[in-house]
Image (tube, rainbow over all chains, first blue to last red; front, side):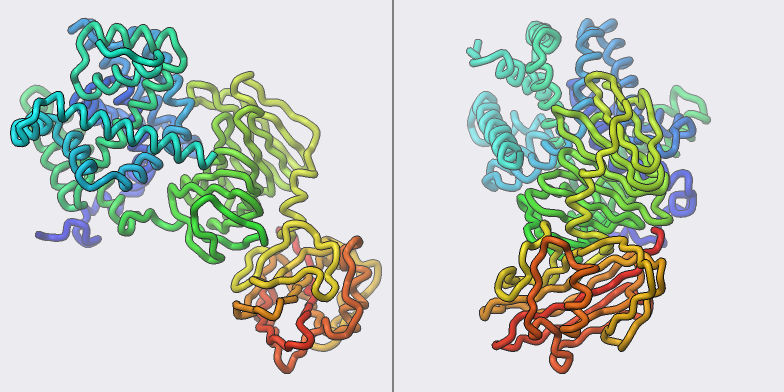
Amino acid sequence: MRNLFSRNDLPLDIVNSSRESEFLRCLAPAYRNVYASVLAIIGDRDDADDVVQEVCVVLWQKYDQFEAGTNFKRWACTIAFNVAKAYSRKQRKLLGRGWGDEALMKIAQVQSGGTELFELQRETLRNCVERLREGDRKLLLECYRNPNSQAKRARVEGHSIGTVYSKLKRIRHQLTACVRRTLGKED
Amino acid sequence: MPIFSSPSEEARHLADALFDGRLDHFGFQRLETLIVSNLSCLQVYVERANFHSELLELADEQSPEDAALAVLKEFSRVCSARERRRSYRDLLLVVTTACLVFGLITWGYFVTDGGKTSPVGRIASLSTNASTGSADLELGRFVRWRETLSVSTGIVSLQLPNVLVDVVGPAKVRLTGERELSLMSGTLMANVQPGGEGFKIQTPDAEVVDLGTEFLVSYEPQRGTDVSVRRGRAQVKLIDRQSHPAMFLELTDNRSAHVEQSKALVREIDFQSESFLAVDQSRGGIRSIDGNLRTAIHPPVSLQSEQTTTPNHMLVIPERQNVVLDEDLVVVGIEGPVRIPAGSCVSSYLIHYDPTELVTFAPRGGVTFFGQIAAVIVNSDALQGTDGPFGLEATLFEEAGFRELELDEDEIRISNDRKTVSFFFGANPNELLDEARILVVSESR
């Protein structure tokens, strides 16, 4: 397979355009926060993926308004919240499902106020996943990579879907305890 | 219906079901009631969103090539869908975004190295008792983008591009870029050199932007953020709960401010000069050290033989700083007699090496200063002659002649720019103590 990442193969506008490069440099470290902010509002992962794409478009459109020297991550998350909130309100109106205004406001407040803490928790979570037993880690990541794999796996192994969810629940519980324990130690 | 030990437990269960796509209408309503009425449940819910978002990202991590192709495919799909219903102009926008995301991934590939993020600086200096919860503490080690450094005790100095940051333990910092870092708790001091202006320190309730300066920031969740500027200028911004800069204050020489998000407060307070003391005592005007050297965290009471032993390292001790000479001073250094003119501002540093018999390290290293080295004094008489004017007042010095360096077996070299002194000490079993005093002429930084 051709190496897409040889510097000579990079699109010239990305390599040479300082504006785009600058935007990408800002967006890369903020991307995880943007995704988490959107997921907190949207809840559903497929919808969240679509909304994050919209957010990236809006961020690029509004990038001229970003004040250099201020915090890009905060700015990006604020925009992500606004796009996600608009989406959630629309869902509530159309389908009768989505957070009310009070819940939206509170979720946004907690997510933006605890950015550092959540980043730390996410880093710790990665380490905890590394420490899982091989089988558990595989099951966990497979369930997240492809949610439908839970039913497929249950069928293959002759279990009920409930058994797979119980396993998943146990692994999540283990990870939650690991994050708490680790951060408790560090603190 | 499961029974839960607490509302938070119930919120966690419902949040998991929501992110799994298994929550029904009533479950959603119940979750909404919980997060609106109970702060712990709200916190649990948002934590859970971050938990699932991280696991999704972990699961989606692919080889860079696969990831790039997947993104391009996804955007092609988006492009095709939108082509049918949107104008050509909109399509261009999506393609641009596809390129941006592609670039984002390729850029991510370049800045990471086998899972490690790119280096943004290095450890420039360590005090004797410096320790961290987990990370390796070695002089010269790279510190990397997004690395979190928890300093349990002592002082760890980080050299970032044109900025020297002293992290005073206990403290936790996260390196969010070459020109910014995040202080999660504790105290740090930043010395911003020319070219480093604009360096930024963030705490949960404040953002401090340097405008060419030496300043100190401390943050504790219960207290808020304190900022003190000793020299130069810095802008202090209060960050509100919506993460917007709400108020700001500009600080100049010898001014301090207190910032507290919960009280929407940013106000000037008395200058906290004592906050700088820990770093001044430990590092003074040292820019970096290497080899088996450590800075002292407290001034030693006695430097007489076998009183302050150095079994694992040599010590560099900042002595009197910024002494303005009333008259010309002539001292005998390794290059012969040196005349330092009246009016010079001189800072002194003592290298102290007093190992036990069980030496397990090579006694070699170097120190780099901000100022220029005027003289390196190794002769016993010259050391004694300068103990008074340059040694620390409360410290006892060895009076025997064996404290001097035996230049036949100890080597000392001054760099061409006269900012670095390097040395290699031998070990004479009968006379273990070796000392050298370095006089540095301060220059404005």
